Amino acid sequence: MGIHSEYSCSDCEFKLVDSSNIFWIDSEKKIHVDMQTVKSSKKASDALSSGGIYKYYCYSCDNYIYNFHISRKSRSIQKEEIIQLIENLDDNIKIIDFDNRFQNCIYCRKDVPLKLEKSFAIDNKGDFFIEDSLYNDFDNKQFDFAGKYYGYYCKDCGKQINKFVILENNANLEDSLIREILEDHTNDLTVYINDSYSPCPICGDELQILGESSICPKCRVGVLNIENQTLFD
Ligand SMILES: [Zn+2]
Ligand SMILES: [Zn+2]
Ligand SMILES: [Zn+2]
Image (cartoon, rainbow, N blue to C red; front, side, top):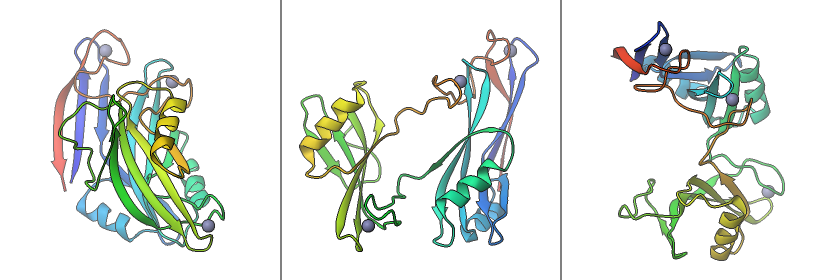
């Protein structure tokens, strides 16, 4: 099911339209972008690769940034090909990333299958919590940082790959400190990604999602209000 929203500024004539878009790459390696509907989702699930498109705005350099997040990929298309097709789609500024589930072997570079997926968190006493649930739901305790653990095994190399992805960094710890703490809890930390903050690719400042009650990007005085919202499938 998709959602289409129209916003207008309380102080100037600025308008913003936003809809939940997806993309997919068909068997002829053509890329398609469409609103998320039952029909387009079906096409996306049969495609060589697909994912969601998320729109961000940077108040510092006044740019809209489109995040193409690849969540599905078949073995018959390479990551580099997918990136190239998305880059060539239009002139928009893009962040192209693959879902954290995807991983290449750090020794032979082959795609490795995901074996284990868990949530983890570390509290302010340094205690480590790990759970099978897909969500970070540790009785609503306050944690220094939390995220996902992904475990892989490359048969060809006979190597285990442990990946930690930080999704929340409540204590604002430095990367090096997080890495050190994680290393205390795992024998071989092989991949570490900090995903809690995604900077603007142009100026490096923080990206925002524009929506209800965001400061107007044009006059910077008024706020955005929903004028119209449609759900469709
Ligand atoms: Zn390998
Ligand atoms: Zn920027
Ligand atoms: Zn305005």
